[in-house]
Amino acid sequence: ETLIDQIAAGEVVERPASVVKELVENALDAGARRIEIVTAGGGKSLIRITDDGCGIPLAELPLAVRRHCTSKMEGGLQGIETLGFRGEALPSIGSVARLSLRSRARGADGAHEILVHGGRQDGPRPAALSGGTAIEVRDLFHAVPARLKFLKSDRAESAAITEVVRRIAIAFPGVRFELTGEDRSPLVLPAVEEAQALERVSAIVGDSFADNAFALDAGREGVFLAGHAGLPSFHRGTAQHQYVYVNGRPVRDRLILSAIRGAYADVMPRDRHPVCVLFLQVDPRDVDVNVHPAKADVRFRDPGLVRGLVVGAIRAELARLSL
Ligand code: ADP
Ligand code: MG
Image 1 (cartoon, rainbow, N blue to C red):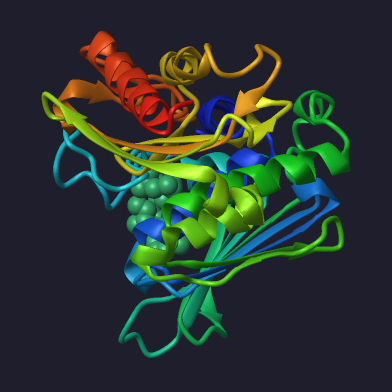
Image 2: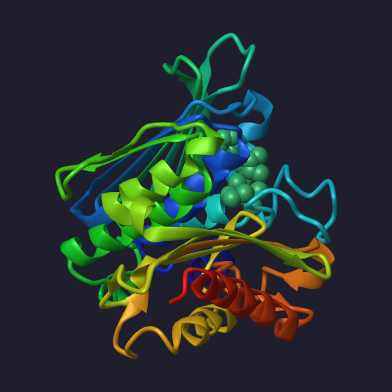
């Protein structure tokens, strides 16, 4: 099974940032309100994620690190509401790193820890933790040198981790995020009320965003768009600060990114990129967010509808502001 896990790992775990993404999503699925992330060596030597979520009962600890054991399938594949559901992340990580999973379920007497190294489980045994879950991933890809070679510098991997955390944090303003480590300057995002979600965005894309953005709120045939888009004067040299979410899940979707470009085409030079945060709400039956295990791609049943909604909503606001 280790080989299968290692192959699956190639799909799910491309680089340290993908480990962080999977583990943070698990913490959010567990209802965490505080998530702390510590990295070292660009996440290659260490990724540690601590959350105050519901924890994992002792009996489920060995299952959590086993392939295709997920506690999130109840609704079937259609209409998945949680961020994870494949039951692949933890076993995949355990097959290409030293994984330690420490958890204390709510109401449990104490915490327990299970270790996975090269796909082999050790434990569970009693451990110390006041609540929630603490996951440590050390020496990522140490047993797969071919993959190690494909990773970028510590600095670049560390930056990719920051980007993943920013992307997720924008969608969860009510959760406190703390990202620290010897390989980075700290990113601390205190929890804010839902109504102050723009504060969270500004903390990430730049303080002046709030004063240089317009709100979006539109819907068409069951697809809804909310969020904020920057004034044409508030642009950037790259499209990095375009954050797009489908049903709360961060995506990097070509269709939507191209719709954004199209919406601003008349008011912004081609080499400039608007800053925006778009939340699309789509009936889960009208979108497939699981084209790839890394879950960044989406496929809409009616791409034209989605594109029209995004372009139309942004253009309408730009026109209203006489831009
Ligand atoms: P998936 O998220 O697709 O279910 P994972 O391999 O990411 O699969 O996680 C396996 C299982 O371990 C989850 O279904 C969940 O029950 C449990 N789990 C993982 N991380 C956490 C966490 N931080 N808090 C609570 N439970 C967790
Ligand atoms: Mg998961």
